[in-house]
Image (cartoon, rainbow, N blue to C red; front, side):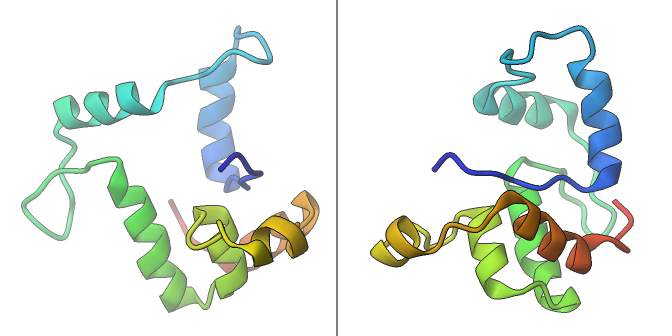
Length: 112
C-alpha cells in the first residue's frame, strides 16, 4: 500500500546524503536490493549472536512501539498492519502532518 511514512530526524540526516545528486522521482534503493545488501553486510546485533536483516526494522518498530506507547492506529498506518479493510480504505485517511505529529510524540526521544 502506497502511503505517507514519517521519518525520524536522525533518519532524515542519512537520507539527505543518500538523495544528494538524485532526481526528485529517482529511487534511492529497491527493497529487494536493500534486503540482499543487508544480508551480505552481516551487521551484528548487540543483544544476540545473529545479524541484522531488513525485517528487523518492522519488528523493532512493533515491539518498541509497545514500550513507548505508540498509538495503535498510527502504528497500523505507518507499518501498514491490517489497513486493507473497508475502514481504512474509505474512512481513515490521516493527514501527513497528523501522522508525523503522533509519530514524533512517540519516537522523538528515541536514539536511533
